[in-house]
Length: 330
Image 1: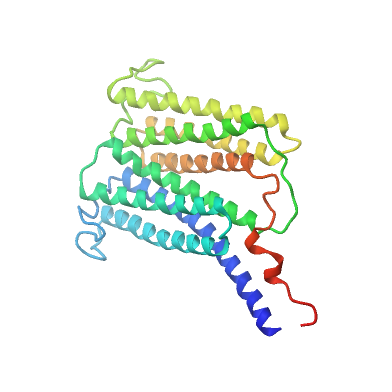
Image 2: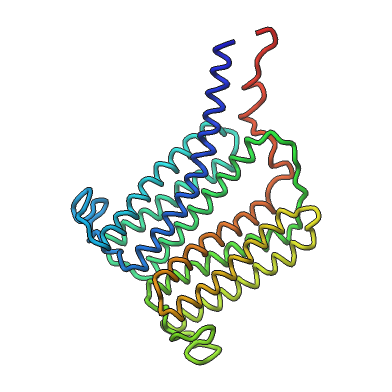
């Protein structure tokens, strides 16, 4: 009896550890995104020189402003790696029969390696803006997959019997299309930042150098293209809101998620204007990147909710009742 109780206690502790690690990995990845944006927007990308993984040839470098920011970014990324590896290990161990979780774990770990590798490559070799923008893109993918992993783990360990009514297939397609569009906007925004084209339209907003339509070539074309893509993203997100209102009685959770995304995309657009009007003030550019990351997660959440299985909260096969049951008479 005592041995079985100890086994049950250990199992529940493992489950609790898995959920906490998954949440910590998601929050930590958001901090990595914010620190990466801080490095870029404070001009601290060369704060450690061309040394990696060392910083100016040392494990702990001497303090300067730019060195401290770049070193902090690397330190947080290193700590985040341990969180992701820990969550990935426990998820595979405790959910061996869940292919969706295994896929998300592989995506999370893979994009972590990609974004870290892109960061190291940028330190060792001078890169074009198109390549540098991928660093931010991979970080967003890692954040999104970490969030989805956390949600899948939470729902697979739930013992509540609650079913989710399906949503129209066209809404699912629109939701995932919105994720792709916003990801494109994020990539273009990162490209504009690394190409130093933030003020290619002057300090006019929403106009571009005094005109409603900018040219589509050179830095101005990149900047105006980013604005056009952002406008398209706004239309997509508000289209989701209008669509979700049709089935708000059966799936109010989806409508709430779309409303959160709509609020975030409006804030993102306003912060984009603030970046231009303030002549790329550091606070505005960092906040813009942060809201973009939150918007991406919000749309991933909408898409996840719309594609979740009808009984997504059923206990995972690996968490069967037999595992924790105490035989009668013990």
